[in-house]
Amino acid sequence: MKFVYFDYGGSHSSVLAANIHAGNLSKTKTPSLQELMEIPLFDKTIKEDFGKMQYIGVDELGNEIYLIGTKNSNFGSTIHDLAELLEVSSKYIFIGTMPYVNLILRIGGFLSRGLSKPSLGRPLVYKGAKAAYPGLVSLVERTKLQFI
Amino acid sequence: MNYLFAGKSGVFETIIAALVFLDRDKEIELELEKTSLFGDIEEDNKRELIFVDYDRQGNKVYTLGTPNYMLVNDISTELCRVAGLKHMKLQVIEINLKGMDITYYLSRLGKLPLIGSWFISLAKIWVIYRKDQIIKECKKMPHPKKRKSTPIAAKPIK
Image (cartoon, rainbow over all chains, first blue to last red; front, side, top):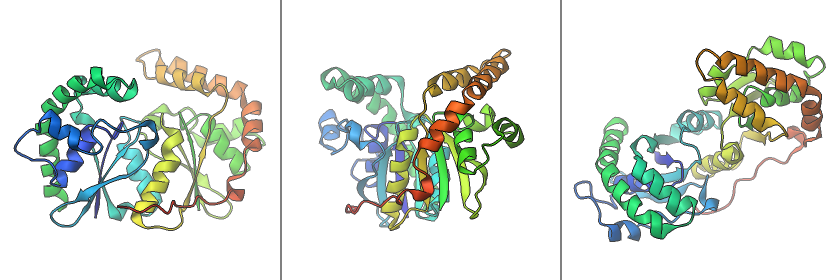
Protein backbone atom coordinates (compact mmCIF):
# COMPACT_ATOMS: atom_id res chain seq x y z
CA MET A 1 0.00 0.00 0.00
CA LYS A 2 1.20 3.51 -0.80
CA PHE A 3 0.23 6.38 1.49
CA VAL A 4 0.11 9.73 -0.27
CA TYR A 5 -0.08 12.91 1.78
CA PHE A 6 -1.17 15.90 -0.24
CA ASP A 7 -1.62 19.63 0.25
CA TYR A 8 -1.36 22.80 -1.84
CA GLY A 9 2.39 23.20 -2.18
CA GLY A 10 3.92 19.91 -1.03
CA SER A 11 6.24 21.97 1.15
CA HIS A 12 5.02 22.07 4.73
CA SER A 13 2.05 20.18 6.22
CA SER A 14 2.32 17.21 3.83
CA VAL A 15 6.09 17.03 4.37
CA LEU A 16 5.60 16.97 8.14
CA ALA A 17 2.83 14.35 8.05
CA ALA A 18 4.67 12.11 5.60
CA ASN A 19 7.86 12.27 7.65
CA ILE A 20 5.99 11.58 10.89
CA HIS A 21 4.40 8.54 9.21
CA ALA A 22 7.77 7.33 7.89
CA GLY A 23 9.30 7.68 11.36
CA ASN A 24 11.71 10.45 10.34
CA LEU A 25 10.14 12.85 12.84
CA SER A 26 9.22 12.25 16.46
CA LYS A 27 5.57 11.86 17.42
CA THR A 28 6.11 13.13 20.91
CA LYS A 29 8.48 16.06 20.47
CA THR A 30 7.95 19.02 18.17
CA PRO A 31 11.09 19.37 16.03
CA SER A 32 13.34 22.42 16.30
CA LEU A 33 13.78 24.82 13.38
CA GLN A 34 17.14 23.21 12.60
CA GLU A 35 15.62 19.72 12.61
CA LEU A 36 12.85 20.90 10.30
CA MET A 37 15.26 22.53 7.90
CA GLU A 38 17.26 19.32 7.71
CA ILE A 39 14.23 17.53 6.24
CA PRO A 40 14.94 17.38 2.49
CA LEU A 41 11.69 18.88 1.18
CA PHE A 42 10.59 21.09 4.04
CA ASP A 43 10.12 24.68 2.80
CA LYS A 44 12.35 23.95 -0.19
CA THR A 45 10.08 22.96 -3.05
CA ILE A 46 10.01 24.91 -6.29
CA LYS A 47 7.31 25.52 -8.91
CA GLU A 48 8.40 22.50 -10.94
CA ASP A 49 7.65 20.19 -7.98
CA PHE A 50 3.90 20.77 -8.24
CA GLY A 51 2.17 17.56 -9.30
CA LYS A 52 5.23 15.37 -8.70
CA MET A 53 5.01 12.46 -6.28
CA GLN A 54 7.91 12.66 -3.85
CA TYR A 55 9.07 9.51 -2.14
CA ILE A 56 9.62 9.96 1.58
CA GLY A 57 10.30 6.48 2.91
CA VAL A 58 8.61 3.41 4.32
CA ASP A 59 6.75 2.90 7.57
CA GLU A 60 7.33 0.11 10.07
CA LEU A 61 5.17 -2.27 7.99
CA GLY A 62 6.90 -1.54 4.71
CA ASN A 63 4.21 0.70 3.25
CA GLU A 64 5.64 3.35 0.96
CA ILE A 65 5.04 6.98 1.93
CA TYR A 66 4.79 9.75 -0.66
CA LEU A 67 3.67 13.34 -0.81
CA ILE A 68 2.40 15.55 -3.58
CA GLY A 69 1.68 19.26 -3.94
CA THR A 70 -1.49 19.66 -5.97
CA LYS A 71 -1.70 23.46 -6.28
CA ASN A 72 -5.25 23.18 -5.03
CA SER A 73 -6.54 23.35 -1.48
CA ASN A 74 -9.54 21.18 -2.23
CA PHE A 75 -8.28 18.25 -4.30
CA GLY A 76 -9.39 15.27 -2.19
CA SER A 77 -12.37 14.14 -4.26
CA THR A 78 -10.55 14.75 -7.53
CA ILE A 79 -7.46 12.71 -6.69
CA HIS A 80 -9.64 9.81 -5.47
CA ASP A 81 -11.67 9.94 -8.68
CA LEU A 82 -8.56 10.09 -10.85
CA ALA A 83 -7.06 7.06 -9.13
CA GLU A 84 -10.38 5.24 -9.57
CA LEU A 85 -10.51 6.05 -13.28
CA LEU A 86 -6.88 5.03 -13.72
CA GLU A 87 -7.67 1.74 -11.93
CA VAL A 88 -4.95 2.28 -9.34
CA SER A 89 -7.11 3.25 -6.37
CA SER A 90 -6.52 -0.08 -4.60
CA LYS A 91 -2.82 0.77 -4.38
CA TYR A 92 -3.21 4.16 -2.74
CA ILE A 93 -4.44 5.80 0.42
CA PHE A 94 -4.74 9.57 -0.02
CA ILE A 95 -4.59 11.83 2.99
CA GLY A 96 -5.20 15.57 2.72
CA THR A 97 -3.32 17.76 5.19
CA MET A 98 -4.82 21.13 4.25
CA PRO A 99 -7.29 21.18 7.20
CA TYR A 100 -4.24 21.34 9.50
CA VAL A 101 -2.71 24.37 7.81
CA ASN A 102 -3.22 27.37 10.07
CA LEU A 103 -3.15 31.02 9.00
CA ILE A 104 0.42 31.61 10.19
CA LEU A 105 1.72 28.62 8.23
CA ARG A 106 -0.26 29.74 5.21
CA ILE A 107 1.17 33.27 5.29
CA GLY A 108 4.69 32.00 6.03
CA GLY A 109 4.45 29.47 3.22
CA PHE A 110 3.22 32.10 0.79
CA LEU A 111 6.09 34.45 1.67
CA SER A 112 8.73 31.74 1.63
CA ARG A 113 7.67 29.64 -1.38
CA GLY A 114 5.17 31.83 -3.24
CA LEU A 115 7.16 35.06 -3.12
CA SER A 116 10.59 33.41 -2.71
CA LYS A 117 11.32 35.38 0.47
CA PRO A 118 12.40 32.63 2.89
CA SER A 119 14.06 35.09 5.26
CA LEU A 120 10.66 36.68 5.83
CA GLY A 121 8.54 33.55 5.63
CA ARG A 122 10.59 30.96 7.49
CA PRO A 123 10.08 32.28 11.05
CA LEU A 124 6.32 32.24 10.40
CA VAL A 125 6.55 28.81 8.78
CA TYR A 126 8.27 27.48 11.90
CA LYS A 127 5.72 29.07 14.23
CA GLY A 128 2.84 27.73 12.12
CA ALA A 129 4.41 24.29 11.77
CA LYS A 130 4.90 24.07 15.56
CA ALA A 131 1.24 24.89 16.11
CA ALA A 132 0.08 22.43 13.45
CA TYR A 133 2.37 19.60 14.59
CA PRO A 134 0.16 17.92 17.23
CA GLY A 135 -2.76 17.86 14.78
CA LEU A 136 -0.61 16.28 12.09
CA VAL A 137 0.65 13.66 14.55
CA SER A 138 -2.93 12.70 15.41
CA LEU A 139 -3.84 12.65 11.68
CA VAL A 140 -1.04 10.15 11.04
CA GLU A 141 -2.08 8.08 14.05
CA ARG A 142 -5.70 8.01 12.91
CA THR A 143 -4.63 7.09 9.37
CA LYS A 144 -2.54 4.20 10.66
CA LEU A 145 -5.33 2.96 12.90
CA GLN A 146 -7.82 3.14 10.06
CA PHE A 147 -5.80 1.57 7.27
CA ILE A 148 -3.08 -0.59 8.76
CA MET B 1 -9.02 4.71 -23.10
CA ASN B 2 -11.13 7.22 -21.21
CA TYR B 3 -11.15 10.94 -21.90
CA LEU B 4 -11.14 13.81 -19.44
CA PHE B 5 -11.71 17.40 -20.48
CA ALA B 6 -10.27 19.55 -17.72
CA GLY B 7 -10.75 23.28 -17.30
CA LYS B 8 -11.27 25.85 -14.57
CA SER B 9 -14.94 24.93 -14.64
CA GLY B 10 -16.30 21.53 -15.54
CA VAL B 11 -19.82 22.53 -16.56
CA PHE B 12 -19.41 25.27 -19.18
CA GLU B 13 -16.82 25.31 -21.99
CA THR B 14 -15.54 21.84 -21.05
CA ILE B 15 -19.02 20.40 -21.65
CA ILE B 16 -19.03 21.91 -25.15
CA ALA B 17 -15.53 20.50 -25.75
CA ALA B 18 -16.75 17.05 -24.69
CA LEU B 19 -19.79 17.34 -26.98
CA VAL B 20 -17.56 18.36 -29.89
CA PHE B 21 -15.44 15.28 -29.19
CA LEU B 22 -18.59 13.15 -29.15
CA ASP B 23 -19.63 14.65 -32.53
CA ARG B 24 -22.71 16.17 -30.93
CA ASP B 25 -22.04 19.78 -31.84
CA LYS B 26 -24.48 20.14 -34.78
CA GLU B 27 -27.27 21.51 -32.64
CA ILE B 28 -25.24 22.46 -29.63
CA GLU B 29 -27.91 24.47 -27.82
CA LEU B 30 -30.29 21.54 -27.95
CA GLU B 31 -27.54 19.19 -26.77
CA LEU B 32 -26.67 21.51 -23.89
CA GLU B 33 -30.30 21.55 -22.81
CA LYS B 34 -30.37 17.74 -22.95
CA THR B 35 -27.25 17.17 -20.84
CA SER B 36 -28.58 18.99 -17.74
CA LEU B 37 -24.94 19.32 -16.66
CA PHE B 38 -24.52 22.62 -18.46
CA GLY B 39 -24.26 25.35 -15.83
CA ASP B 40 -24.82 22.93 -12.93
CA ILE B 41 -22.40 24.54 -10.48
CA GLU B 42 -23.47 22.24 -7.64
CA GLU B 43 -22.00 19.39 -9.68
CA ASP B 44 -18.94 21.50 -10.44
CA ASN B 45 -18.36 22.41 -6.80
CA LYS B 46 -18.11 18.76 -5.80
CA ARG B 47 -14.72 18.77 -7.55
CA GLU B 48 -15.38 15.25 -8.78
CA LEU B 49 -15.07 13.94 -12.32
CA ILE B 50 -18.30 14.62 -14.21
CA PHE B 51 -19.40 11.81 -16.51
CA VAL B 52 -20.76 13.16 -19.79
CA ASP B 53 -21.33 10.10 -21.98
CA TYR B 54 -19.77 7.15 -23.75
CA ASP B 55 -18.18 7.65 -27.16
CA ARG B 56 -18.90 5.30 -30.09
CA GLN B 57 -16.20 2.88 -28.92
CA GLY B 58 -17.66 2.72 -25.44
CA ASN B 59 -14.97 4.88 -23.85
CA LYS B 60 -16.09 7.10 -21.02
CA VAL B 61 -15.94 10.87 -21.48
CA TYR B 62 -15.66 13.10 -18.42
CA THR B 63 -15.17 16.75 -17.60
CA LEU B 64 -13.52 18.26 -14.55
CA GLY B 65 -13.47 21.77 -13.15
CA THR B 66 -10.48 22.61 -10.99
CA PRO B 67 -8.20 25.64 -10.67
CA ASN B 68 -5.13 23.41 -11.15
CA TYR B 69 -6.44 21.82 -14.35
CA MET B 70 -3.04 22.23 -16.03
CA LEU B 71 -1.61 19.78 -13.46
CA VAL B 72 -4.24 17.05 -13.84
CA ASN B 73 -2.32 15.25 -16.56
CA ASP B 74 0.94 15.40 -14.57
CA ILE B 75 -0.76 14.07 -11.44
CA SER B 76 -2.44 11.26 -13.39
CA THR B 77 0.88 10.33 -14.99
CA GLU B 78 2.53 10.29 -11.58
CA LEU B 79 -0.20 8.09 -10.09
CA CYS B 80 0.37 5.58 -12.89
CA ARG B 81 4.15 5.75 -12.69
CA VAL B 82 4.30 5.14 -8.94
CA ALA B 83 1.69 2.38 -9.23
CA GLY B 84 3.93 0.70 -11.81
CA LEU B 85 1.60 1.00 -14.82
CA LYS B 86 3.25 1.30 -18.21
CA HIS B 87 0.33 2.92 -20.01
CA MET B 88 -2.20 5.40 -18.81
CA LYS B 89 -5.81 4.51 -19.63
CA LEU B 90 -6.80 8.13 -19.52
CA GLN B 91 -6.28 10.98 -21.93
CA VAL B 92 -6.46 14.38 -20.26
CA ILE B 93 -7.31 17.28 -22.53
CA GLU B 94 -6.78 20.71 -20.96
CA ILE B 95 -9.32 23.25 -22.11
CA ASN B 96 -7.99 26.77 -21.99
CA LEU B 97 -9.98 29.11 -24.24
CA LYS B 98 -10.31 32.85 -24.52
CA GLY B 99 -13.11 34.14 -22.28
CA MET B 100 -13.03 31.18 -19.89
CA ASP B 101 -11.92 33.32 -16.97
CA ILE B 102 -15.07 35.44 -17.27
CA THR B 103 -17.20 32.29 -17.22
CA TYR B 104 -15.28 31.03 -14.20
CA TYR B 105 -15.73 34.22 -12.18
CA LEU B 106 -19.41 34.43 -13.09
CA SER B 107 -19.85 30.83 -11.95
CA ARG B 108 -18.06 31.64 -8.66
CA LEU B 109 -20.47 34.53 -8.14
CA GLY B 110 -23.19 31.95 -8.70
CA LYS B 111 -22.49 30.75 -5.15
CA LEU B 112 -23.93 33.96 -3.72
CA PRO B 113 -27.26 33.57 -1.96
CA LEU B 114 -30.38 35.03 -3.63
CA ILE B 115 -28.66 36.60 -6.65
CA GLY B 116 -26.40 33.63 -7.46
CA SER B 117 -28.73 32.10 -10.03
CA TRP B 118 -28.66 35.36 -11.97
CA PHE B 119 -24.88 35.04 -12.38
CA ILE B 120 -25.25 31.42 -13.48
CA SER B 121 -27.73 32.48 -16.16
CA LEU B 122 -25.28 35.18 -17.21
CA ALA B 123 -22.46 32.63 -17.42
CA LYS B 124 -24.64 30.35 -19.58
CA ILE B 125 -25.54 33.25 -21.88
CA TRP B 126 -21.85 34.19 -22.11
CA VAL B 127 -20.92 30.64 -23.15
CA ILE B 128 -23.80 30.25 -25.62
CA TYR B 129 -22.98 33.64 -27.14
CA ARG B 130 -19.45 32.28 -27.84
CA LYS B 131 -20.55 28.79 -28.84
CA ASP B 132 -19.37 29.02 -32.47
CA GLN B 133 -15.98 30.31 -31.41
CA ILE B 134 -15.68 27.61 -28.71
CA ILE B 135 -16.61 24.85 -31.16
CA LYS B 136 -14.14 26.22 -33.71
CA GLU B 137 -11.35 26.33 -31.12
CA CYS B 138 -12.15 22.82 -29.89
CA LYS B 139 -12.10 21.46 -33.43
CA LYS B 140 -8.70 23.07 -33.99
CA MET B 141 -7.22 21.16 -31.06
CA PRO B 142 -5.50 17.87 -31.94
CA HIS B 143 -8.10 15.13 -31.70
CA PRO B 144 -7.50 13.19 -28.48
CA LYS B 145 -7.70 9.85 -30.30
CA LYS B 146 -4.94 10.94 -32.66
CA ARG B 147 -2.66 12.07 -29.86
CA LYS B 148 0.07 9.73 -28.78
CA SER B 149 -0.75 8.13 -25.45
CA THR B 150 1.06 9.78 -22.56
CA PRO B 151 4.23 7.86 -21.84
CA ILE B 152 4.98 7.23 -18.21
CA ALA B 153 8.31 8.79 -17.30
CA ALA B 154 10.96 6.17 -16.66
CA LYS B 155 12.19 7.76 -13.47
CA PRO B 156 13.08 5.60 -10.50
CA ILE B 157 10.47 5.62 -7.76
CA LYS B 158 13.03 5.91 -4.99
